[in-house]
Length: 364
Image (cartoon, rainbow, N blue to C red; front, top):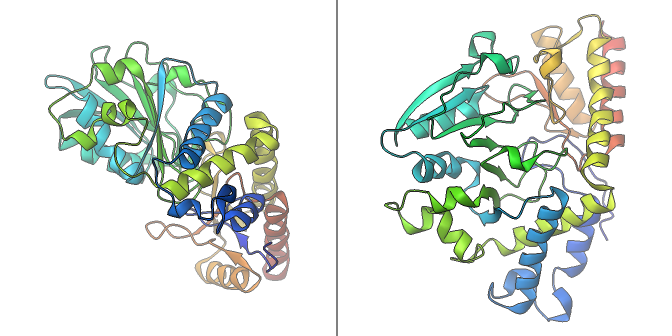
């Protein structure tokens, strides 16, 4: 078992994993299922691995109540490869794809799509320094669009969608890399959901794609085989060697979510954790200031600044000394960021809140 002291881990990704999952992986690492091999040494065509693979798919379907007309795929390349695969498969000649810009990652997705077809900006909050999510009434798209794309949670700016636009017959595509599995959602509202695993699902290296089957059937065909969603759907995500250890870990994380009471219990815990830190910010009389507008605040990434630049440097240095990891804001914006993903314990968030109060009391 893991006996060394655990850090107060607020890394934005790769990020904290549940201690119970790490301990189980440690126990099974050398000899999985009495096979005499690690899961990392097994053939991805073996019965032992196949059971792990299919169980992970089944658990994800169960947790999200994914309808039968959707496929769950395990891919590689992170969310960044999906920036290309989505338009490559869905954006046909003569069509337009609409992108809602709420931060750096949605900008990057839009940039890739521009290389492959006609796109347009459906809404943007860039003029407000990405402090908020657009009002649903401000989103402009057409019934003839190939799809509407959004990023459900913005790790850099600390904003998160609370309600999603209703796009009717136009497929809604969501990059959920940083808030997947953090709360219940209605999967049937989306054409595609994709997410890198390294925030809430497991270690880096696995990407999940949940895709409606009609989009598979109607996708473009004149694209490289490995970049077709249908290739992976037809082969149960075993067209090429999958990231087997990552999928094993993902399956264990899904079991952990089930044991914690499912997505509603996870959401409640995430709300309680985030409130600890947001309350300190809100009650600090301006010593700490949050970046995101209150109505758009993320439960996953809490972004804030300290009263002045020198104090902020001191805050981050003292926090590091006290065992807090990953509190520096993204290099593109600076400041501070606490990523409170599913596996970050309540006690870790309480420790940060207490540290912030003590630091303010000492330096106000």
